[in-house]
Every structure is written in structure tokens, then in C-alpha cells.
Image 1: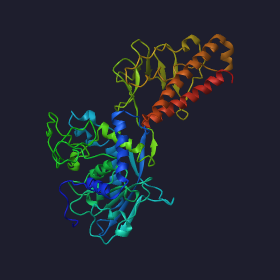
Image 2: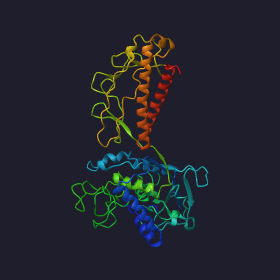
Image 3: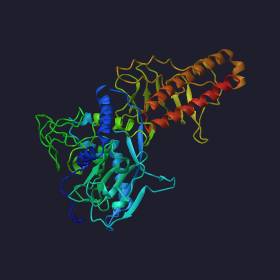
Image 4: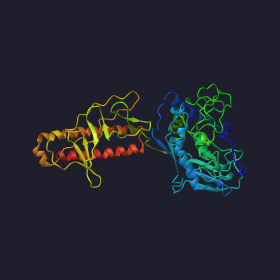
Length: 489
């Protein structure tokens, strides 16, 4: 196939490779059975997943080219990495185009991709290899994966996702090897005109979704119709994808009903169908579970894990702060910058009087100084220690079943007494009360920080949430230092 003869419909060679390996590699069938057993345990028995965070997978891109056009640029390669990170983290803008009935199925795969920075010998690399070939094009026979047959040898597949970009024949857009196959051929192969979003990338496969599709196979996803032609009897072994009669191509209109799957019809917006790049937007919850099961088993040695996102959100039920996975953020209400924790008159307000943070009308204040933005306690003498007591904190509401524990009480320093020795001597009763208050506040911080730690261990904190946790920890250390000084330590 010449460069100018571009595919007009999606084709994938993953199942042809799968069937070839079943015939030619004796141990492949047993390896595939083990993969399916683990996937079944996760899907059916709800067996726990070991990787609860975001897996960051190093990618090596082997560019195998005969012409200058086929020797794609680093910018085109990076554009593909960017697409993968959006698609697998459900941050692709076109996720908004999913029919509303399918929106609840959409899931963050908790997988990210980076070009490798270290090669197998420990040398620095940009994650790209370039091989000049005499081959006019490659088929799905894995010849592109060996230097001996005009391609490029794989890097260790237990450490890298090998991706070969080349000219393919017979209108083939790409193919992948399922988990459990030979290490020397493990990875994905993509037609250079279907790779990334710039350079040689050509419509209707110029949005990088071919690599998304093939890496789905690499992580043990099947085609959504079950590869039985149009028989309605095949299965992708995923319960939340509707049964459908064969692949969808182009840009179908919703609903497309086959296999008696009305009223919503085929999930043709799924990355594992055959639609054009502009028409595929999502993985489902159970597809994600299947990919994560693969990372726990066949792919257990690849990638590093970082905490996954959790978000903090004030619910519609009164004043409770909960960990949520629904993209909510912790925001101040629109009613004059007031953050309320309950329905009684005690409110946390930002005042306009000189950068002072005040708590209701009870005289307790925190001031932000001008010396580097540090949050410091007042230096002005306390005239009436009774006013320094924080407002009473309500007992947190019980979380509904299924939610994580309610975070509370409010993770803020509600009041802090002056800790000078003069004040201590003048107000011994207030000093003892201040120590008790400080201890209570420290316990409150420790409770909140413990919940952050639990959420982090469960892989539920985003980078923003981690930063908020770091901020609260810094406040805790500052409060501890104030308490230590107050106690004369």
C-alpha cells in the first residue's frame, strides 16, 4: 500500500494475531486462560485489585520507515502520548458527546503514559528509536518487531510498552498482542498515518484513537461485539457493554439497535468498536476493571503507581465534607464568601478588614501577615480569654452507605491563644483551657490527615488533593509548634 492509499474504515489485526499464537505457541493458551481467570475473578467475585492508584507506563516508540514521511516527528509521537493520557484518564473533551444514557458507564482507566527516559542499558533516551527499512510495508506477522526481518527489536516487555509505528499493508490500521504472548513480540503496531494528531496523521483516523484501541487490547480488552461476525452470540467478557451484531464503522447515529438491544442499542462510542476516531470517546467501568486485572497479573511488573484522584465536595446534605469520585471540588459558596458547617449561626467568614479571617461574631480571628504570606497567630494581647474559645463543633453526620468516612470536624484552626509567658502567668485558667483547646485542635487535624492518608492509600487523591493534604499537614506542624511553645516545651 502506498502512503497515499489511506484506509477509510477501521481494521484491526489483534484477533488474527491471537489465533495465530494459539496455533503456534504451545504455552500461549494456558497463559490466556490464566489472564481470563484473573479478569473473571475481578468481574464476578469482585476480587480486590492490587493497583489502586494511577499506573504510569513507560512507552518506547520504534519508528520503522522507508520514506521520509514515514519517519514521523517527535511532535507527532508526543501528540499520541497526549491523546492516550486524555482517553485513559477520561479527560478527553469529547467525552461530553457520549449519549446521556451511556454516560454513567464511562470510567477513568487510571492509566497514564510517558515516553521512556531510560533505555534498557540505563542510558538516557527520548523514548524513540528509528530504524531505516527496505520493506515497503508490514503485515500482522510481527516482522516489524525484529531487526532480522527489517523492523526493530523490542525492548524488555516487562518494563516498557513497545509501540511500533510503520507502514502497514492491506488497509490495516494496527494490531496488538494480548497479555500472555511471547515477550519478543509483545506490544502494539500502528500505521503511521493513524498515529497521533499531527504530521502524517490523516482523517478519519487522525485523532490518535487507533493507539487507544490497540492498547486496550494490550490490556486484555476484546472487541465490543465479541468477534463472532454479526451472530449476536459473541462476548467481550464485559457485563456493562451491550451485546451488538458486529462492528460499527464511520460515525453512527444514536441509537443504533442490533441484537435486540433497544432502546439504547450499541455502545458504538466505545474505544473498542470500529468507528472513526471522531466517534469514539469512552471505556466502561468493567472494561477498566478488566484492564486493571491485567495490570495485577500479566502486566504486574510494568509501570509505577501514583495516587489516583479523590475529590472533596460539600454535599447537598448539611455541612458534610466527603470524599467523592465525581469530579467535585471544595468550593466556597457564592453567598458572600461564607463557608458554613451547619445550620446554626456559627459561620466561617472571610472579612474585608485587613486580611483577617474571622469566625462568626465571637471575636476569634486569624490574621495573614504581609511577611511572605505566612499564617501567623496574633501578637495583640488577649483582652478576654473567654472570647478565644472556638465555637462548638457539631458531631459529623453519618455517611450514607457506600461513601467513605465523613471528614470532620472542619480542618481549620478555629482559635489560637497568645502563648507569651506574660499571658500564661496572667491567665493561668485560660492557659490550661488553651492547652486543652490546642490538644483538641491537633486531634482534629490528625483525624483529617488520617483520612487523607487512607484515601491516598486507596488511590483516591488527585494532585490537587495531595497539595491540599500537604497544606493541611503544614498547618498541623505549625499548630504543633505553637502548642509546644504554649506548653513551655
